[in-house]
Length: 495
Image (cartoon, rainbow, N blue to C red; front, top):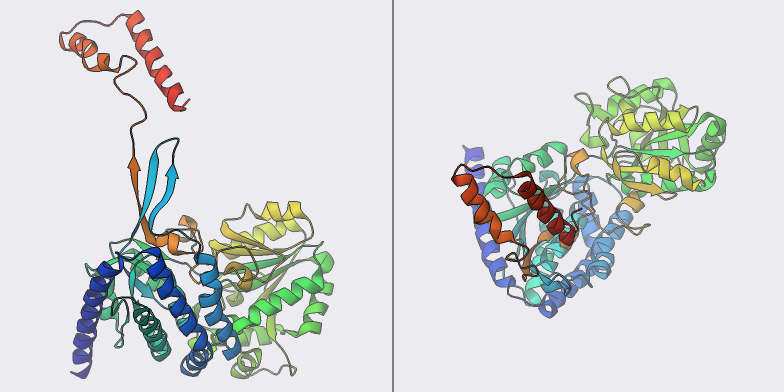
């Protein structure tokens, strides 16, 4: 009975949040650029002031990751993001083509639903709040139950900061009594215009099946290929920095290392020198069993844990100071558990003969749960980077840490914690999601071609009369009509 009561309360709360946020968004839609920027600046200020407290709360509640890295993510999702989105035109006339006489005008999408993962709860909440408000949208969050407190606190801070700077009350909301029924209610309620889903595959699929526009992201199973011309110490340093950042909780982090035979020993020695531990086959099997439940569903207790925690949980001994665990794998699929996504400090390790074999292996790894997301390559041969750019992913990250490169820390990609995987990965976009994905664009188009010229009217008069009277059309007339159509197409530039 108690569960039934909780469920009813959860659904009713969700309905109230959606109605309040929609009303607030209707008011926000009338704000100008100066008003919106004032609101966002205050949100960024509050996010900065609370970056440490939110990071501590997230680690304390979920057990995932590291406080110092979550602090970085909170600041990246606020200050760095603001610098990137500040010049974006998301209100009023955003483009005017004076030659073709088309004017583009930005309009908000409306009320958004934000699905927040337990791995990056506070930074994702800050990020989605900012890009929503920048585009004059409201947002209501559906938190992961295991990250409820920290997500609620981040959403409250963002809402209070926005309201203090002039935004309508309740412009940012968050479910405080999470349940599947509440999440489904929010997904399907009339007030929500679009869903931004960051989380597990099941949740993303549910978002896409809700019957309304959704921006979802698929899993990442990022292969990191170290090609023979690579700067090996730098490549290993980047991979370890990436995989240990917040203990591997970002989906753009490397999952497998692929090396060529000719540099295998050098790479292994470099990993050992920098804090990598190569597990024996028996230890690899033990860790694999500990990491996954029900096939390749990851054990939540192992997500975002240090190498020492993983080793202790699996009952193996590792040297003090070990940063990442590496397990050699001979194939991809069910019999090779480390070939799947591992949001923690464990890497699969593969050896190949050459880049052709590396290509084939990377394809298998991507098809094993990472199509459309990201691929990392370390090489000093630009032509090789181009060859790997042909793989079915939308982020080819060259000579950088994959985690940092994918979200835009170490690359020129848009700062984001929602990374689209395109249609190949079942996503509606292949981009790093920004406010530009959260606006509608209306177009004012002036007539620039007179459709009454070039004898167009003959299509509706003489020819129709001929056809209607059962008469035949001469070959000369047919050729004349063809010439007229070709002339029109040339004017339009269609041929």
